[in-house]
Amino acid sequence: MIPRYRKYKKIFDRSFDKTYSNNFLFLNYMKRVYILECENVESRPLFDLHKEMIGLLVEKPKVLVLLWTTNNREKIRKYMKIIDKYFRDLGAKEITFLDENDEDYRRKFRNANILYLPGGSTRIFLEKLRRKRIAEEIKHFRGIIIGNSAGAIVLSKIGYVYRGKEMIEYNGLGILNIKIIVHFKPEDIKILKIEGNVIGIRDDSAVIFIESGK
Image (cartoon, helix red, strand yellow):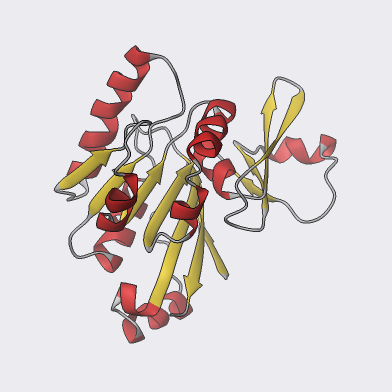
């Protein structure tokens, strides 16, 4: 597992470029690329990063979205439109929003090459994912997996987020064996009391993990 990080538009260093130029056929070389991020999808600060990654790795983007981070129907309708337009502007022709009660979810996972786990309520998201027992589908998904805020915590072993001055801890699905803090601020270091290594993801930033091998 190789972590890569860039806050800015140009994310590729020489070793990264060389890896991909020598192994361009994404699904033949890599199982998964994880993009863990904190992005406001309305203002799109990471749009260029996504465009570069998707353009490099996926010939025909097919996106599966799990918009399970709220029970508010109005919010769901709003973000369906925003996320749909986001990925269409990235060149995706097929964008599927998986219904929580869809029994055909396995086929839809297999049909997609980009999986998007959005932000919202981490608690609600984890409850729904565990109730649906969908972790295995995420674990074996081949393609690009984007976890935004709550979605990033879902992918991690343990995730943290500050609510005011209180740090809330979540047990993620453990797809990646890491600890993360979303919406991280440098001043958080002063009050950080977590054992072991932790990855802090600032707003408008992303951490990229590449899982290689057959």
